[in-house]
Image 1 (tube, rainbow, N blue to C red):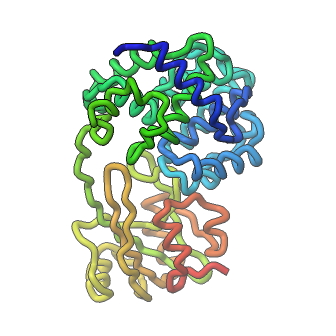
Image 2 (spheres, rainbow, N blue to C red):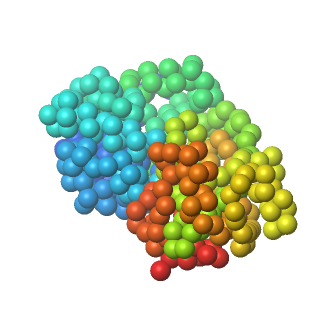
Length: 365
């Protein structure tokens, strides 16, 4: 049953007839390949494509990305999620531009030393740019290998990661690593898909363990997902004339580096304006305010947690707020013109949705 040559040859032959055009395919500029691989981690290709093109238009070289303010990088990234990728991308670009004179490492080990670059990204850049024999291992590859070889070890285990890493490297066509890596990734993305794969036209069907043993729907085996933690955010939207107070979130929590409104995390959210006023009186101390409206609850589901939020629109005087929120967030609080929010600040998706919904006083001109 173990037939690496069958697997490789059939896969490469299949791929030779499949054309899945993407702007980074066949690219030999390490900056562009690295950018695409970082951007497409945990992101669908159809979503990441437009971001990739916008980034290259604004930052055509690694030097220009490195020189950009972090806030601008975050604004362009807004909507892709997993913002740590954006921060690592910027840090790695600065290292390449300033410490390595703009020259990307040309080895797997050198690439992996860059901030935010793991085995997968290092293998992708090494093989696609330098044609080095390093196998990529992403979700698509895990699925193809698990089904073909009948591996039912749960993917999240250390045992599985080591097993698949060895198997992926053994399957690699060392003479055509770039072609092989692209072939297996495309195969998993377009034919051997998670649900309802088209096994009837699969070139590997006759020797595929899952197809021959009716295991396609049960492989690969994934660990049970942990229950998501629910967090309740009461946002206070402090309006002073045509300005609103924004706070840049610090390290160590969700959305670090992005801007949102001052918030209080509570055991439960207020159900109506009366309940909100009762909560806000002790929370806001001596700040004078008038509650203008309270939004309906909004939800954003993240990988490990669910955020439930309501927005309390308050009318305040800037002089009253300066001694309270600004002192609590000395370096991170900023009064922003309402019409500049989307243009000047990187916002979490939840805040962006609220702004786009034209909240009661937060109307963009």
